[in-house]
Image (cartoon, rainbow, N blue to C red; front, side, top):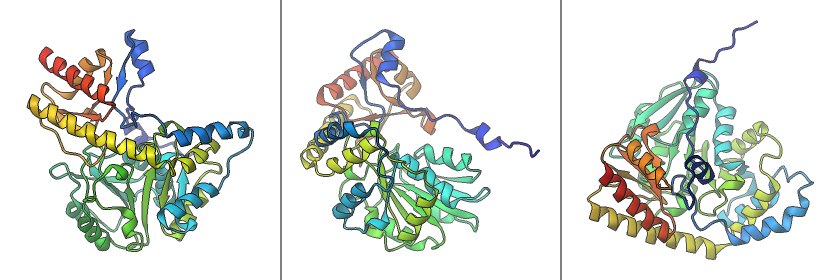
Length: 363
């Protein structure tokens, strides 16, 4: 019998999710905690999505639409793209994994920036691929360095725009030049989980769908629309790429309630505008207070940003955790002096600032 090879799996570290509020309060015996660690929508889910969920509860005895027809139809109208160019998945995470499973064979290379979304590394190593990481330059993805890293073994390139965890974005000119320069046999995965929060300065992948026949654009309903708990994501590519991925994906990979909620959320412009206003005003408040504290941070194109803290991110994280404020230490991303925080409700932002001050004073 052939020996089971687990070398790459042995090297993997389980993904460190933001600590759930319930778990923290259970561990520390506290109440009234707030979570600003997972870039979630602090307002909650879209009200129109909630109504769609309630309207479909009596259908839970039925399997969902395996083709996600009505969600694809809605996305087709919103983005003016044919349905055969649209992918739907169990969160954009599943679509990341499907891209790897469909196009990567063991020993082939995948290029990513570093630091970036940790899931790329997990999926590539889990599939037996070789991950090539290119350091950021001034907290931004260095596209020239990514191009230099391409070899005959390169099969996929992951570009997270805006990038998580740094919140920085690529301009249309930068991304267009990069896409044109990448060999046409390489799959480019453009992960745009936070694109709705970005300014007009940041490139939108839909502008380049016809510039590279192996471009995959990924998006999600988790952040802007507040549907993280339902796990529903979508993407765009060429009909050929979509067809190949659909051959690999599991049937019924997006559940009935998630599909119904996503269709409704796309019409909830009032909720979208409310969320974007909250994030923009929250960032202004947080930047101002951090400036007053003399702390440096990375201006963001998302609903989260990095803050450089004294005495190490892990220490600040632990101290704030005891006060019931959940943030993200960036140690697992190789940024030992940075924390990441997402914009919360106004009262949560104020509590974060006051707790951060207290934590720094205690050190």
